[in-house]
Image (cartoon, one colour):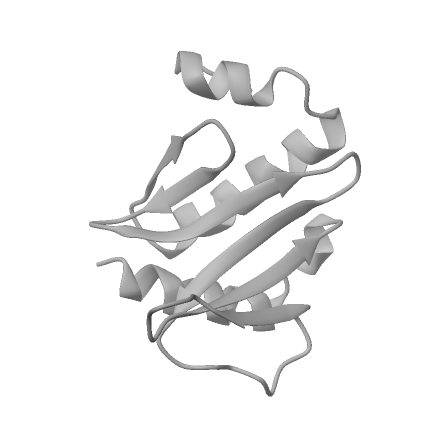
Length: 120
């Protein structure tokens, strides 16, 4: 994919081809849920509807790390590798690491939809 946004071009410049493909798969999965946009910053990419609802916080050689902020803790799952309370708030960041397209399974998509709905 060719990126027009200069900040996104810079963000993706030194990323592995595999990580870029994973980002594109994540973006496509969110597009299937609803109308979204994403906004690159120096250290992350935020996905938003009306407000930001998910963040790509790291793109490694063979993975991407995504965070979903929720007001409640979702401990009974197989997808989150870490859940941390945001200091000074009632928000909980739910961290997921995506290694392959197959990691965007039904359970993950359910949480993606919850996150998206929080961004409306």
